[in-house]
Image (cartoon, rainbow, N blue to C red; front, side):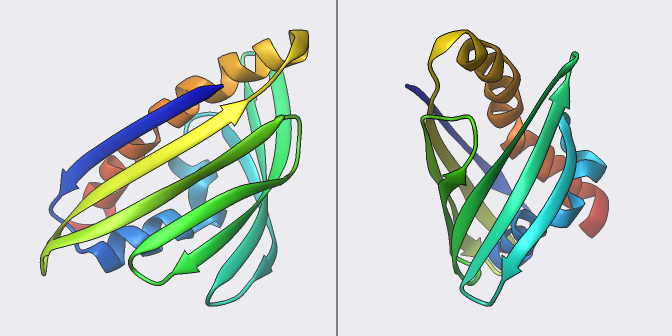
Length: 142
């Protein structure tokens, strides 16, 4: 099992950061290793999406179902893909009107030779996600 915990204090509102993380269609524009995203289903309280990861000649895809609590939290669970399991959350805690704490927790497990390759691809992408979203927010909102 791999567990990744990251957090950052940002000078952007919780609502803006929630919207940025929830805008999965735009991930390929700024998230290293994310080649494509297909939104399968979307509502105000849930989203199901397929992410395509590709880096260093390796390509994988997986589907997550995200439960949305507007401007506060995104919880995700694996629906389909090469992981044994994948779950996590993003939490957006307001500090002021224009600042918040962003926390991401991801846990995933993979087995076998393919699993090691997937872990080598997904681990670094996941570990850098908070930084990537903070930089994206700075570029978009300032």
